[in-house]
Image 1 (cartoon, rainbow, N blue to C red):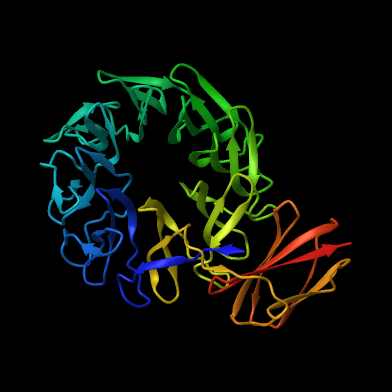
Image 2: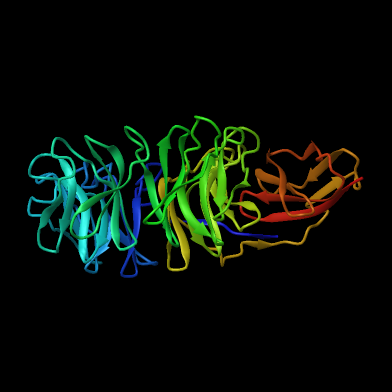
Length: 455
């Protein structure tokens, strides 16, 4: 059986303390992020695949320049733009050119969030001269007000997304509430007034020729789409007035994938093929939630973090048929909470935490095989085999911790549990008769697989 290991890139804040890298971005063959080393607060760092570089102590001291609420960066004019605070000018627009960071704002781009490039201009939600947060633009020299959507207060534009040659976003005005709007380079238009009051669309995502998002209506917060002309209610996943809260939208295998809660299976992995919605994987069986989130494509699979109820919140993948635990970084049932999954230089980078190093930068390399071990009775023995119900697994432990998985003949995982420092374990096979595969994965990444037949 093939297995891969997650690898710690560097312990930026040595020991059990956490450097807590955030907002991983790729620019000019470098991975850019914020982290703290114990001397400076959250500040810009870069990684070129081999070595780490501390870029600049923008806000000197332990406070750091990275705002905790930073929402979305954007590449513009060959640089990476973001919000930062140098401790003097407040939260303003800054950029990274691959070598150094520069304050780009002259006091006109305050509190820039939801950055998005449209028609050679950087757009964002920013503080206007009138004191409200409105749609702002930056042309490479200075920031300017694009539209005062709500003259009476802040319209709070969010989820800026380019679609159908327009800039779509969500914003509020006193007459229609918080709804879907667009900017065509000339003016702002209301695209859809889904609900009297506020439908508050979230997570705008373009998949092929439609804009997908969730929105609040009389049937709760559910999945909607828009083609530039007509609005479509996709599905009432959690039927009735309750909400399924679909989010983390991504395209995979010609489908829209996302997490949602139908009220029965918990928050799990779902898809929409253009016609129907389907529950793709119930990773934490029953009504409990696995909460698959931060979805990203890597190695022709969908990678994400999830909780199967046994291993904690760890790194998982879905290949279109089966969900697989790829790396159990914080073993023993604790959670490493992988976050900011980002593909760079042929690897999947992310932030995760465990007891020895705290929360640091890691990577997962799908091309690295850590073991290919032939099953042996010297390592694992199952009896009786064939079995009618109960089986006993005897172990020659070379690790203090194993993850045990049982797969049916179709390759679906039907049972999983952790085995800690014992010489044997007894378990009941599923009801269905047939061939099963029993796999044990040790804490050092080695795996052993044997067959067992239920009669």
